[in-house]
Image (cartoon, rainbow, N blue to C red; front, side, top):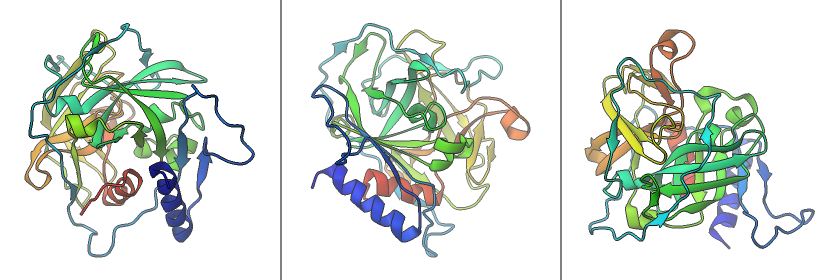
Length: 324
């Protein structure tokens, strides 16, 4: 049984046990014609967020460790044509006051090389760019709107370029194998559920490393925790990586808020603690997705859907992380 087929079977079983709806697009079926030999093949499996931690886990800190390769990583750079699409206009991010972002000039060092630019296309928007970050050998986290740019409208192609630096792609690229997002995002565009798990058709993470992820129980548990957001903003020169660090200003049950400067194209970037002992390195706490809008902390800060304890379990299940 292939990895992808096995994952579908496991999640289907979990969904049935939990009484969840499961929708599959692009999965092989007797009624579907086979894909053309050169056509991208991937599965977009959508299921509502419904995983709950055990009583022992509720309120606890959960972690999956980062992987930092011990040796220097050789590169075989490929050049690109400098055209990848525009940021998704419906999901703007904000520069708050003077721009504090700093360019990452050496993208082949860890953890920068575990962050990549995403090039996507869909049937409504056309070509667009986002950011994603590795959480194991062949899985990335990104914003839900980078997988489903609008309601019930999945991407038709998605390509990930780890460590991209301008016109150079030091580790080439990977295509999407399968994609997963909460149904509350896909159907209702609920920003608290604007995150996605994407499985790639390569294992570049074994070369470049990956981020850990963590969750902590409690609505305000992430307030004042150090945080950095790093990715590929569309207001800077093509394919350049930028980042900024400070601390979380406001922590809610499903969202974290910070006054780190961002711009469209950084959707899907890691909002991470640069060093967390239990993680053994940099550790993601949220998936950056939004700028200033609305009222309350939404109107003051950029913000990101948080990796809550239930979401931690969902990510571990879908990406097949050890999470032990």
